[in-house]
Image (cartoon, rainbow, N blue to C red; front, top):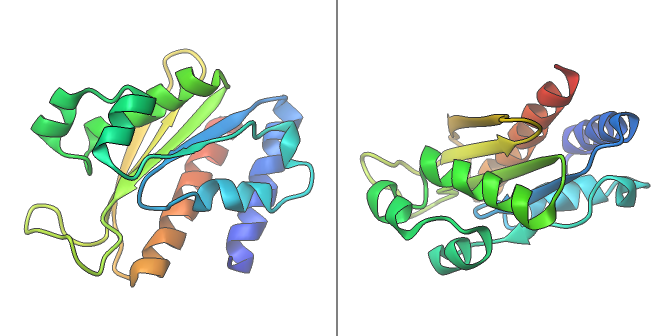
Length: 162
């Protein structure tokens, strides 16, 4: 993990602890990197109860209640899927905030309408909070995963600070 990701995780952890809030994550292309970054910080058990890696479409449907119709119409790498993943994780873990990430880390798997590096990051939270951000990273697989994890943590930090 990069020093920047660790510093960001520490800032997020401090903000969550100060608010008394809990966060979980539903990860696909990051494979657990977001939760790994958060739990690299001492005291993270005060704000991270768990998370889930749902790499396959079947896992997204079974555990996060992503609708099959969403996957058929929009695909796994889409704004709609990221939104449903975040909402599903929020319900599954019964926490204050839920992050989600789905994307094409590379080097293969891209298409003209969904290039390598395309990533959607979702955040569900208090009230009707639901945000999804779209990115197209230009790094290699590991760089794209790190960029996605950092972007997710920044999105969460912005929501907590709002």
